[in-house]
Length: 364
Ligand SMILES: *Cc1c(COP(=O)(O)O)cnc(C)c1O
Image 1 (cartoon, rainbow, N blue to C red):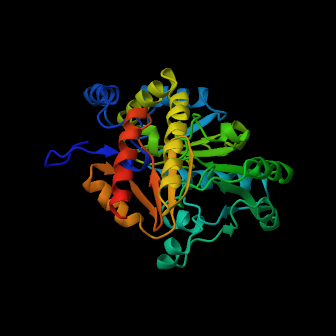
Image 2 (spheres, rainbow, N blue to C red; image 1 turned 180 degrees about the vertical axis):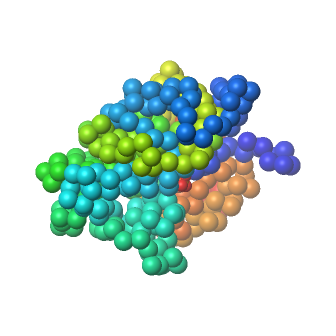
Image 3 (cartoon, rainbow, N blue to C red; image 1 turned 45 degrees about the vertical axis):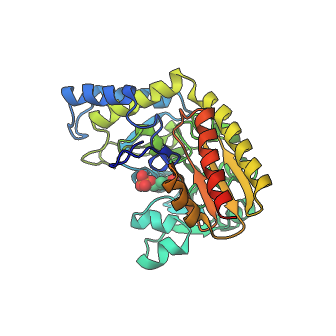
């Protein structure tokens, strides 16, 4: 990346895990230009070929059967909850409550603020819409205890991105899935951040060995254009035409862009690349933890990684990295998050690590 003064940066933020193929990748640029010359917008009163192509790819490469496009992550997550409520009305005696977990992040509409169990996002906007029960994270028993006759779904992130790349116990999702099956309620996975190969498989649920009934994806799907998708198993697909909609949803322009991204990711086995470079990146972060006493812990899932410090220096380090040509994200006062484009190389990771090491060394 280059700024307006021509200074060069290595981008390990990637527009918040959005720029899957980096900046201005010719495959994405070409797809957008070609579609812009053909058809940009029709409203979702009509089906278009790019929309059908994208839906087909998503269905062929996931455990879900149905797709409804949205314009953002929050719209996908909220649409997922609306779908679960429809299901509750039709099949669960009107159950409408959704259980979500502490420090989750599901976006910033009023309803998803209620789902996002973090006081700092909720308090400025109370009263919030009802129907969300916030329980402890990484605790299947807490989900069980909170489930009642009004519960229609449990909504979880496979890895909590916005709260600092928090990775739950290996059996957490499986136990949540088993509980949902036992109770006949739906499991919604919010894969807005973890989806599209970010954690080393096309979707993170693959690594947990569970299948969601409903899934929200967005961020990396369009490689930079705003698009999200609500996906559902046939058995959970309770919407009938007209139940949900949106003027801009699934426009041919964004669908053509997302189709190009998905094809590139699948044809080039980007998930395998993410596993390889992600492991390399984690090793390098662990070496920082060994060499710098202020560094506390490194963790990661594919190319979604974090580095904790013993003190609240993430702000200062982020600014110094920027001045040295590296973009990183201060996700918590004492935590940096790294989410580079998925095509990042080992060499570029080493370059970024060397800038970060320089910044940390300059503080001592
Ligand atoms: C970013 C994010 C959202 C919200 O997406 P927007 O496109 O910002 O509305 C929802 N859920 C998760 C898990 C996210 O990381």
